[in-house]
Image (cartoon, rainbow, N blue to C red; front, side):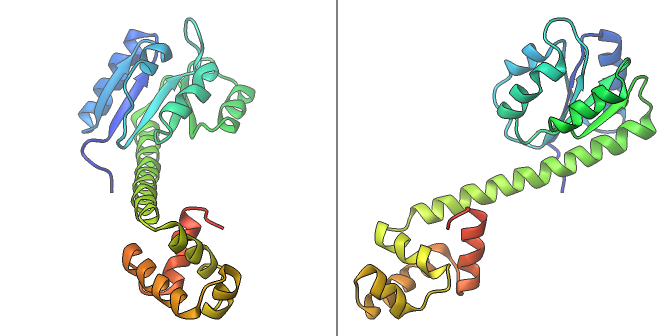
Length: 204
């Protein structure tokens, strides 16, 4: 679900383009913020909510394409949609290969822009939710003691209690006690759920 706090950031050095696109999107109910340059946008504090970026590929100073990776590092949950009045096929392919979501030619009409924005915000929402889930799971995993974590990493590989006990040089009863604490702390009831957490956290 797209939240009301979701925002569309427009980065274009043409004030008439910023004005027209901002008007169009605000009329459609979107929250919009515009910037004259990518550098100006990068000065923005981290935006940890849903949103997307409309980025002009050709601007004065450093181009959108030059700053794409820097923007992606700082605002990883904001998909980039390139807009250009002079982009060619090679340029659009290069932008998409570098991770942009879409490439739109100016002048942009509402029938093209709105679906592109909705797709970007939907992806941003999914990314945002995944990030929050990982933070939550990381906090749970961090609550495990070092020994519980060791048992956890063995459990998710499908090993039996007696096998874990042998590998860690502890009793099977101790493994069972740790197993109970692990499931309690992580809020799960089965090994399958433990495996799901391990996969989400890339724990091997």
